[in-house]
Image (cartoon, rainbow, N blue to C red; front, side):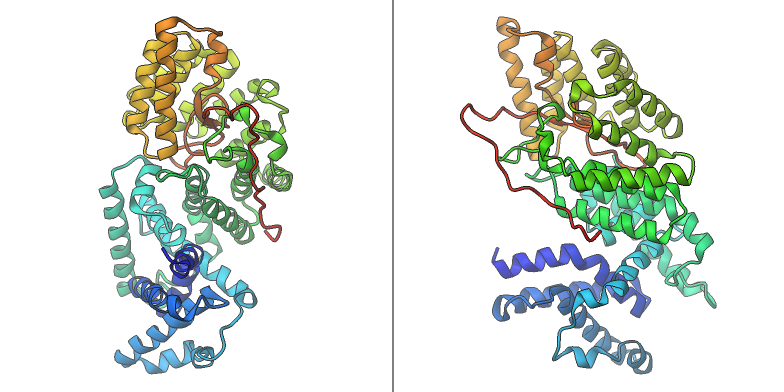
Amino acid sequence: MSSANEAVVATWREQSARLVGGLLRLTRDLDLAQDLAHDAMVAALEQWPATGVPDNPGAWLMTVAKRRAVDHFRRAERQTRIDQELHTVRGEEQHMPDVAAQIDVVEDDTLRLMLLTCHPALTVESQVALTLRLVGGLTSREIARAFLVPEDTVVRRITRAKSTLAQVARTATGDGSPFDVPGPAERRQRLPAVLSVVYLVFTEGYAATTGADWMRPALCDEGVRLGHLVTTAFPDQPEAYGLLALMWLQASRMDARTDDTGAALLLEHQDRGRYDRFAMRRGTEALGRALSTGPPGPYTLQAAIAACHARAAGVHDTDWATIVDLYDALAHLNASPIVLLNRAVAHAMHSGPQAGLHLVDELATAPGLRDHHLLPSVRAELLTRLDRHAEARQEFRHAAELATNTRERDLLRSRAEALVHVIKNGPTISAKHVGTTGTHRDDSDTLYLTGKANRSQEITPGQSEPRPDPVPPGRTAVRPRRRFSRGL
């Protein structure tokens, strides 16, 4: 892929939600807004390799899309309306505007798009799926994995959602169009779906569903950015701040979650000196705001769990008793399969692997977990710690078959193969230490592997990461430190 085409892809990933949101405001037609945005991207793929990448790529895409909108409405004999709404288009042809100077409008368009795709005429599942597709830029497969449902189900939800919005628009009178920004009361009703969308965008970046990379930092940044936008729109809602706190606290560990090859590291093997103190501080501030605004909800409880991990000097210094209490409270509010799986891991860390295994086995038939790699992965780790190595190896192999992320699948396979020697010759070190080289994803990142940093309606936070082979003696894992925008 050429550098120009790479620039198109990167710009689309960063600007597509703003672009579609702005075009939706102008056209009041979701399908047309998407078509115009896609036309602009095609134009960029055709022109940028020859003319070079413009100074303001996002503004270039918006200008081209607006011109296409003008042409469309001219053909539809709607020139009067277009002249009013797009009167600045002609001046943009010679001068590309500065996106930073238009940031307030751009941000409003993104929030507008989120609120519109969370219209009450849609089911919650369709609201989240449509907004993830349009705002988060996730594929149908990524959304399906996040919600533990077949990909065809997600496609149908998105199709039905767009059809429903179009039908509401056709039958609406006065100010009832779904493309009008809702008032304060209705916006609060849509808040749960908006929060779900934001967190799913973040978690897809925090632990990628597919591909060769363990993380997709751009999606994490987008999740945090949208989280700030939501707290601005809902300053009196504690869960908005709870979600923002959770994302900042989870993001603070991103530099330390992989080694120099990109392989995932368990919490106990992470260099805590690489934790982003700025992100931790922002997360702690948001958590304090959430707790002072109202009673803790699911996101605030998850943020409190993440804070326990962030504060601890090491895994063995972690306040597991408090984490267990927080997970018990979270399960009372949201007893989803992944929340319960994370809770089982926390109990294992506090009371021992047998206690955790008992809770995990109770989830063996839970909907959504039977075909998910997280359940056998956690079982494998706990079985390893109990010296039941043959059973653990089978569970690791089964988990690898179910995993869709390349890094994770390779890691699970290596964990299974590492147990072959133990089964043949017996352990050379205690089961406790064998287990800690395991493959998990966070309940925060410790022993386990409770997948994505908790998927809103189906999943919870803090989960542990898989442990790759250690860095060979004499070699130091050094990577450039990732920094978050201080402007957030």
